[in-house]
Figure 1 (cartoon, rainbow, N blue to C red):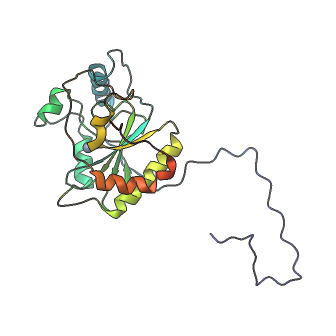
Figure 2: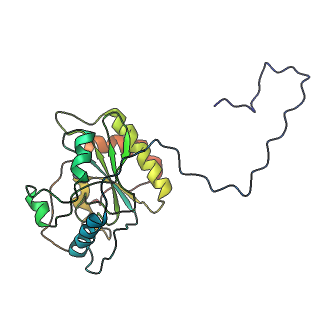
Figure 3: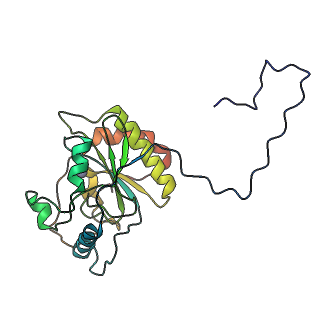
Length: 235
Ligand SMILES: [Zn+2]
């Protein structure tokens, strides 16, 4: 938008001075969250999925867990390992995990998902509320918002549009949830073990992850460096 109050050489010298700007409206609502185009495309998060989520929390986090709500403290970036946004959506939409994913299925039948999915052109889809728990990272699901990116490390490397979209989404989420202190890639999560955020009751339940890789994290972090978000613990 042009600066309408700035100097304008086309205005004759004898024209009357512009009216002063109106005083701020004290009854106006607080500033809205930063504008960011997000497409809501909710996956199934019904009573059955909530029950499975609570069962997962009781087994892995807290035997007294009674709800699905989380207080976001971290953002964890992922890649899907192939497929498309549509295929990922359909996969996450199922409430129960496929039994072929044995390590994960053995740890509970709640299906994996994430709060956000970023397509290769940078389109951001919100799949579920930011404050509802998704199963996307061992030990950190109770504090972390997950962002999946369609792609992988080999055939379909993540795109510049995804770098920009993830950075914008991180900025948006930090503004909405000021308690967020960390931004990590899924491949970095094991370095969080020992941090107060990390909570997994089963000491044997750990998975090895390579997504989304250091190159992608370096690019996203460079764009949000001013937010001061921490990375994984350095040992
Ligand atoms: Zn991942």
